Length: 256
Length: 274
Image (cartoon, rainbow over all chains, first blue to last red; front, side, top):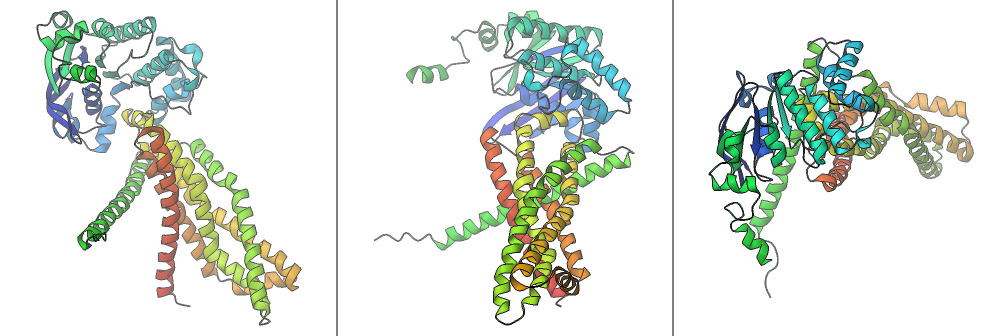
């Protein structure tokens, strides 16, 4: 479904991705783990084509995202849903209009069909009673759910989620996670989630990948990943301060 | 004592940097306009409306209708001042009957579009930059792009069309307000009655002056909207970035309007000297 081949990316002096290769199979729920700023969101943006890598190729189905023209890329994006870390709802539109936007702009559906689809998706995420509220009137969890409904409104084949449970209380985080799982099971949606929330990651994932210093250092099924022998992965999973991740930087912090 | 003057090579380097930055910005703005047109016409080719009428009318109301009092008032005061100042000078030679023509030609051909352009750059241009800039930093623009919706067609085209179509209307408001103000001055200070004032205006104004003014207005509208939207969509650095981009948008748009006006006048008077 999705494939990254030897992707390199650098932001000014900082090398963010250093030869990342990754394959995602249909209906899989892949979770990409890594420290903050390690390049997880960059990978999602590259799959979506809003960021172009310095080198390497990215494929979505038979399309090479990195070589598509703007017009074709826009058409391919209609098969991909994206949920941003801070939801990215249009602040001037209410919940209903946010969810309806892709349908209004990209389909020939009538107003009643649009209303029906919007109601269905909002009901799916439990937000049917907040249709008339503006994003500023919603809590973080509610915004995430609306963003999820908007991402699903065009029935995408691939769902990209950037930190779906970051900043949410554990109960709402679990609700979002369960929603992602049920979607993938019922609608056969493939999903790629970028997160560093361990509980959420293990709940969602059918397979996990660890991004460290610009490379995928481990790729395994959830259970194998949890008991990985790789010292970086083991430290990340346990959340310990002892290990290779903070080597050097911890000394610098304590010296201050 | 050490020589503190910069070496000629450093000055040349500085000029080179500024020129390169200027040319890069002009090139980016040009492609920004081209891409907006391209994205909009692609949509029309597919038999779909490029943006919603409601969205277009919202901008025409905010940028146009709401600007009428400001444009009218400023032009009224300027017309008043211009008629008074020129009137006293012309009176010394007994030619105060030239005031109506002078104010009418100056405003229709030059000051109306220029003043309106400056006011719209400050009022609507700043609003467009701040609005799009805020959307840019809160990832809303990227989310629109991620859905497969062309952000230039969806966000820029209705704003651009609103300003392009409204600039000539607002320039006309400016011209009328200034000419009306000068008619009051002519009546009160130089004993020129309204009917005679109107005759003098009609005698001195040429269709060419009116067309020149309208043509300029269209182009100023396009320039202001393009600069404002471009600055908004290229904001970097959060809230501070929105602030500095808005300032930069107003300064650039006003400078561009005045610069373009000068260029237009030079070209125009070269080819049509009379």
